[in-house]
Image 1 (cartoon, rainbow, N blue to C red):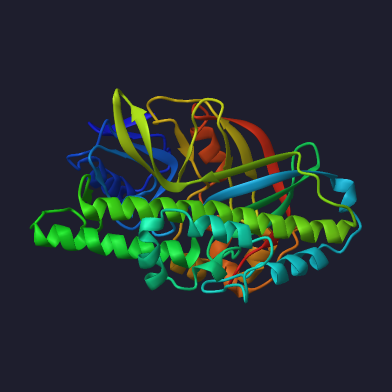
Image 2 (cartoon, one colour):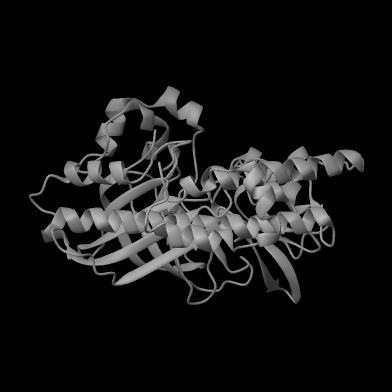
Length: 389
């Protein structure tokens, strides 16, 4: 751990100057308590750094949560071993998953499925005071439940160090969460303009606790976080069903972990109850299970938190980008992507060039930086990868 400033601690051994400056801007906001914790996978984000933990007292910065509210991971360990997959055409399983889960930005279900119906009902009853607003802003949110999205979101079938089969996926609150976040970021920016606040970045505009604007954001935030968690559960049920059909045997869940890495909660740190926003970080309280994915061709990790006080009980959420999407597309080739994905069943397309493992930080370096934050329980290696264009 390195102290970069009075209120900025960093666990990142790879940190560019732009990311450092952005994190410093956030740490110097007057309502930060006690400090911002910068995770090993830190990189530039919108307003606030991705891979940062931001404790605020009496205020919230919507951009410090991000536009994919509740984004996170879910993993299920099955009863199957690697032998169950050997000799089988894994492209059949990949295609079945792709047909079962809507992929790519804007993709949605045609109807609410039987498994999604109770989850939709739960969301209809969640934060009811804001239901009319959510309906007006995202009237088709029900059809988004059980959809993956694009970018770094993925579904994978993996093997751990004991050759056991895991199902693993990464997604969040999709279009509904995005629209809610964009709305509240705009509200915060308008408040800053109206009150002539001087900010190093317009997206560091905040909402003040005790105001109607703040309460509205917290309500929508909680709803979107719940949507994201249920969205992952819905997709996982579908993926498990496809694996069951592929192997001709029902999946038995031996373990399930579902955790956010873009979210806000109330927690106590250094003697004060604060709003803790983890933007690209997971809860690593002592004994807390968590998930840290690498990129589409590298390892992912099942971990347990060590409860490091200085990190605000947090750890990284993944590898963190080394190159922007545009830079990656200019730098890498489809042949390099094929080499990186050797031995993994995936959809061979130029669409995934910006997700090539070399566009990300070395996940082993990130995990070494996080050694004081989490203990590794399992290392997962993909055998099937599904992504949206």
